[in-house]
Image (tube, rainbow over all chains, first blue to last red; front, top):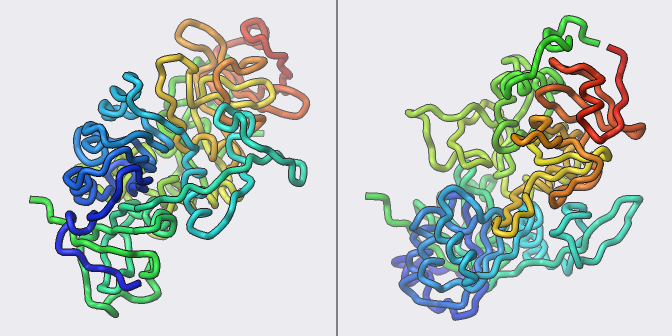
Length: 223
Length: 224
């Protein structure tokens, strides 16, 4: 399908349904698609499951979505931070579900979803509370835990640049979960700083090929 | 053997966090690929010699990370796993999270240095959760690092603020990884977790007898 270039973030997030699983890129604020999250708040979808490394920082972006009561469940590796007061308050009040996943498993479970893998055996977490109740198997003398894919209905990611076909490149550590999430959701929406003509990105440097990307919007430059 | 070490005699100690970091830095092989955990382990970077050739990995997707960014250098797109702005060194490489953890889990990382609440005599690690009922669990990359790196070094004080030992027969806090720790650097001693048991290689300001008395873990003492 041809990638849709959107006029603004509101057009980019149109149609996200209540109850969706939304993969949200970024590690802390690096790579966080803030315009798309703000648009999702305006769009109004609720009862969401959000998959992201963290559970919101400060009062903006993901934290603002949580504060509006739109999120039923968070799947993340590290919710607790110095500035995660919005999540902390909801969690302590019993108003949000939490699934804590080791960071590498979070990435690999999404990678599996994007790569058509049914499940995989992983050594991370063996013997810990996060592997309780999960199937294990000994392979070559080492114990592994069976981990299942995490698939999104929607992925919201941030990238540095797109061409008009939807090929993406990232910048420094803002890449983080973007390329993995781009493979793992039915509808992938990228917020980028710059959109260039097709052919203007060296094919050797494309990180996320256009096949994964459904909608692209240029972010609003910071004032 | 390193007979010239100024840390190696028992009159000196206990060590402060910078001295422990210096001790860890001295044991990292030249040219090693290393991940330094959030918090005290990041201090190790300050003690690596400029010509060490050590390549620092940060799990949010970078190799050959440089020092923390100074005021004029801060780039919001360039942070470490603790979300602190950092810099890049020549030869740096960026990659996504699945690749970053694949290189960890796949045994490509030589050393990781982690903090700990407790380490057991068998090398079990507890460093992510106190188990307190009101604590919000947050694991980050700790479990992945514990099972992935070829060598796992722990850096911690040997006793809690209330005097309870952190090197214990069995961890009472929720585990991060089973039998994954190779060496424990503390303010008063360095311990190697070996198949024969816990071996004390160096002490700082404590006698072997005092150490043995204060821990419930049987200790082997290397020739010093």
